[in-house]
Amino acid sequence: MFTPAQIEELLATLTVPVTEIDCGTLCAPDNDGIPICCDKSRIVPVLYKTEYRVLRARSDLWRPFRPQTKDQRELGEDMRACDKLCECKGVAHCERDNRSLACRTFPLEPYLDHDGELVGLVWNMDFEGTCPLVMSRHKVRRDYIEQAMTMWRKAFEWAPKEHEFYMGHSRTTRRSFGQKRRKVPVFTPDGIRRMPTARPTRAPRR
Image 1 (cartoon, rainbow, N blue to C red):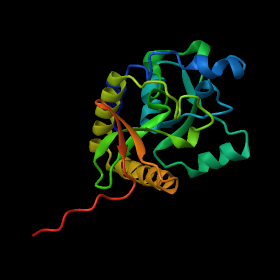
Image 2 (image 1 turned 135 degrees about the horizontal axis):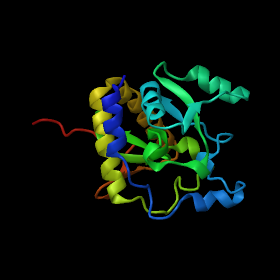
Image 3 (image 1 turned 120 degrees about the vertical axis):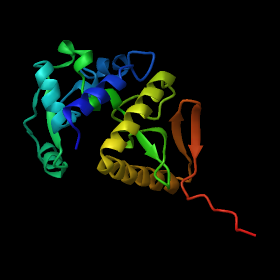
Image 4 (image 1 turned 45 degrees about the vertical axis):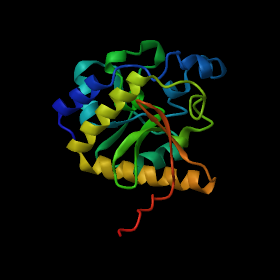
């Protein structure tokens, strides 16, 4: 998958927060003071195995996660061979420079069009109703979008299987929005684009 040097570059590429607000303040008060994305009973981070080794060499922040429920065990069984379920020491001990890529990208993911081109970022709809940011009106920072897209372009160049994986996610997103007869809201550096769910038709040649 990725080399240690590539993981270091991906981590260094995406450093800014998603929004101007501290989004943890939206959900932590109703979750015993813990942001939902930092609560291992709600969301378990998935790290690339090489990423885990890189971060472990930097700090003792991360350790393997031991599944405790049926859903968590099934998640571990469904993961790709290059992935690893992990947990950190908790929000009170967060080291921002040693956050995982999963932490830095949550709750957004790359959106690829029908031809596989990276258009921008979309909310990960698996977390709708869990993370208060998903489908909210809170503005996503432009510099975050730019950094995230740069990071994903590098990732797709170095790991074509990641490109294939997110092609599948993008198809699922189009299918979900298409069933609701809605366009897909995609975050780009120039603002939100409403992308059609059907492949654009080409004008016939004359």
